[in-house]
Image (tube, rainbow, N blue to C red; front, top):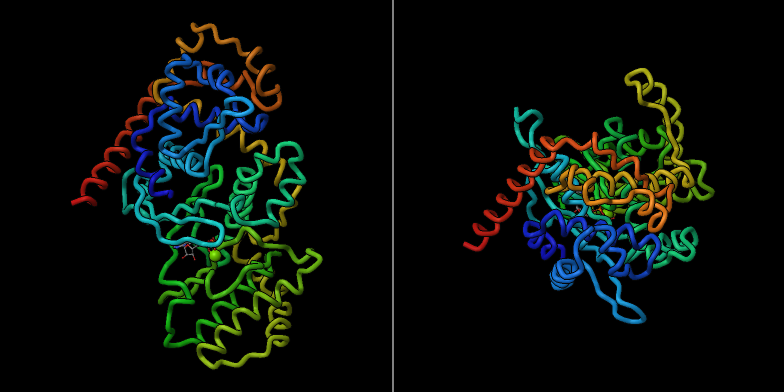
Length: 405
Ligand SMILES: Nc1ncnc2c1ncn2[C@@H]1O[C@H](COP(=O)(O)OP(=O)(O)O)[C@@H](O)[C@H]1O
Ligand SMILES: [Mg+2]
């Protein structure tokens, strides 16, 4: 399905992105975002809007509802292209490749991170598009409670919350814990390093004892940083000649969690069971757990000596949700500034009434008119960013052509 979204990505222009952002923003308040809102938000005449929306519906990026009133919602795929657009514009990726994994709650694509200052080698990365709202009832339940009336918004919120949670914890753990390096985050998506090697579940190890020790070592370091993975198994561990990398972090907990001990036990038990079943290696669960906890204190000291960021930083959920709300505004604001044919003078001349807009549609705290300040918009920069997008689109379309051949 996302393949379809990627295919249409290169045909989207700034107005499409603005419409999509308009629907995204509008969904905070409307179950179905009405045409009038989109007209105000995008400043596109109804006819043009109608035409563009038809295409977006056809490409399955948005969905139209006609009863009890006409309105629009964004699909996951529409959301994907918004995140993708942000990554391209920020130069966090310069090309996207094939799907490399589908998880319970995500879709993963290979991509390329351009080298810094155009020197050096491009870095292979993946984009993880979270899909929590679609599948995870637990997540959704909590999110629904939090959202109340805005239940229709819950999947966007759940996926976004999961991505933010995962990105935050990855930046906390990296590089002390062996995980793919996190590079960027937007909406429900994360750009991270391509993990080395292959999944433990799909690999036959020649020296399993060594890998088991490596995994338990990472669990220890993680624990000493005040984090428990909470979904550890052979499906979330990569193994390569260099060692191991743990992936898939959004559900992590801290040792203060009421079920922290059980969760840690389950993690370790999953790993031990895998090594017992596949390689006949026997390790006592209780003894292994004791070892992890005993060494955790010692590790903390070692890490503190070795690095500066070795302190544990548990993330409070309330804090996170607050940050998430702010994140929304940032993402959207960024989209607006980076618009392709966004002309500052025109913007002003068209008699765009900031205050009215603010009050009528989005509420002051959510949509700050000051942020539209024209002095912040540098035409040159926007043009340069655009060229980048065009290059990307060109590359994507060349890829498509060569794929067909
Ligand atoms: N950094 C990565 N590098 C390579 N493959 C990855 C990476 N992250 C995820 N994958 C692949 O995508 C699958 C799903 O990702 P994961 O983070 O485990 O999400 P989920 O919560 O959906 O299980 C993994 O099993 C793996 O095959
Ligand atoms: Mg997984």
